[in-house]
Length: 139
Image 1: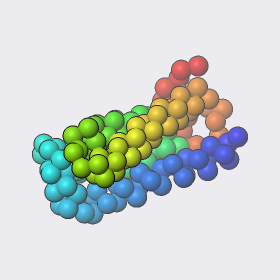
Image 2: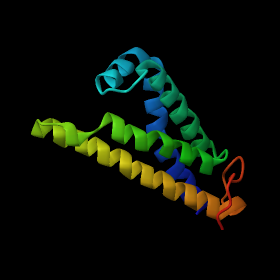
Image 3: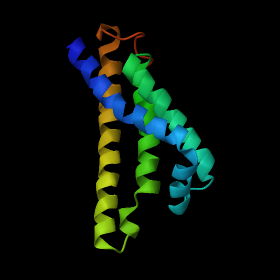
Image 4: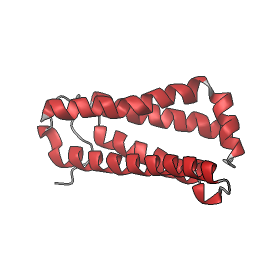
């Protein structure tokens, strides 16, 4: 099971690490988009969210308190879904559909992050191929 969880962690975290690179290297452009969605202090929010997903993604990938890393990803994903993809505000059907897909993707990833948190926290030190054990214990 350890190798399957490791492969899953690698695949899962690659999405967030790639996004973090975009947040941190194209901050001005991404902040402009966030600002157009009404995000306050968009530049700072883009930097902070980029750091949040970089840290969370690396924690999950490397297995350093990966349960905490998964929670950090939830902290990013839920507000992002609500602030950046409010499909209910769109009047154009095509734009509404696109935002709904992005909203649902973020919510589904938040659910997957919560499941990863539960798995890692429950397995404890028995889950191999990690640098540290979990920070939380929900067994």
